[in-house]
Image 1 (cartoon, rainbow, N blue to C red):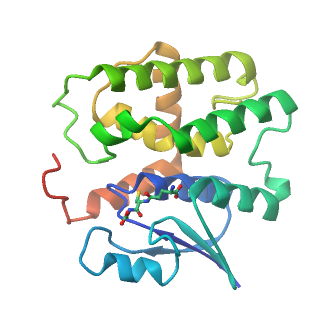
Image 2 (cartoon, helix red, strand yellow):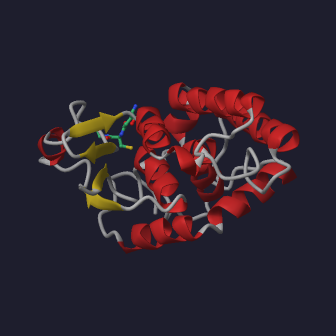
Length: 217
Ligand SMILES: N[C@@H](CCC(=O)N[C@@H](CS)C(=O)NCC(=O)O)C(=O)O
């Protein structure tokens, strides 16, 4: 039975992008079930699959996995040959640490700069101090990962890993809000945004017609 991935609007659903881009990158076949969020009937529709009423959720037969990091780890266990975490123990430890840091943190960035893939990039915003601190930390994570473990390829830990999936929505935010970053981070962002999976997601997001109230286009 094929895997089903429940996701939200591609323009806005940052959490959905994470397992989606990982599954696409690693060639894991799945059926995409897109449920538009923020509509009056959205919670009831999502609750049919996901006990938290949130997306993403992965359905594998009778098994449902929710929470993004848990979904990625389920895929790691189900498809061990795909090597979704780095092989090297030190790299793997750091990849997991920075992925957990993403999963649990960066509240100011998430709150003030929600993902909006189609945002007009010509409208830069002032960056509040708490968001700036998040940006600085993420820039440091990307720079350190690339310097310590990035020799084998252009991604954070060389080859594409779950850590890149976890940070994909940050790439979108830094790009769409024109947030200045270091040259290393800028190069990394260009690599992510050039991925065929990224372009596929972005093309679908561009076709979405529902615009969140109060959100800049
Ligand atoms: N901790 C969750 C967060 C999931 C989440 O907040 N998803 C948002 C969409 S990006 C959602 O479903 N929002 C709808 C709602 O809260 O009603 C995860 O890791 O998957």
